[in-house]
Image: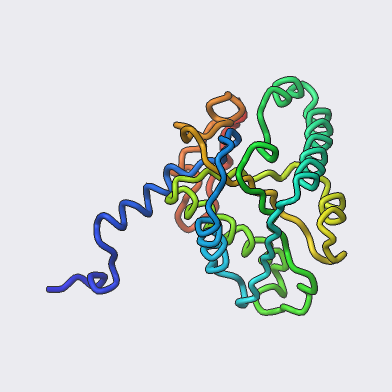
Length: 225
C-alpha cells in the first residue's frame, strides 16, 4: 500500500538537507571581508519574499545598504544602544559588553528588514492579533537565514538599535518600522553551538519543556546561566 505522503515527500537527501540547515543555522557575528555574489544575495531575498504572511499582506521591506557612511552610521546607532542595554542589565553589564553583538562593519552585505507603511489597512488575520505583521517579517528573515546557511553564508540578526534613529537614516515613512539589521557574509566557520550559549550567557531550553498536551506547559527553569 502506498504511504499517504509518498507523492508529496522529498527525497531522503533533500529532507536531510532541510533539517541540517535548521540545525546548523547560527546567529553569526564574525565575518571575513569576502564579498557576497549578486546572484546569491538575489536568491536570499527571493527566499525571504516567499515566506508566509498573514492575509498574504507581505509586510516585509528590505533596504540593501551599500553606502559605507551609512553602514558606519548604523554601526554607531547599534553601539549607542549596546551601551544603554549594558546599563539596563546592571550586574551583567560587564559580561554583556564583552560579547560581540554585531558585524556591520565586517560583513559582505548589510540588509535592513522592516515593516511596511499603512499596515492598518490589512485586517485579515490581524483584527485581534495585529502583531502578526511582525510575525510575518520574522518568517521572511528565517527563510533568508536558512537559505544563506544552505549557500554557506552567515547571517547575524542585529536588533540593538533605536528604531527612530534607523528610520531616519533610511528615510522610512513614519508608520514603517525597522525590525532587523541583517549582517550577511562569508565566515571562516560556523559556530558549533549558539554563540551566546558558548559564551555562557544562556543555555538552550530542552525542547520537551516547551511542549505539552491539552494544557499550557509548566514554567521553564532559569537558563540565563
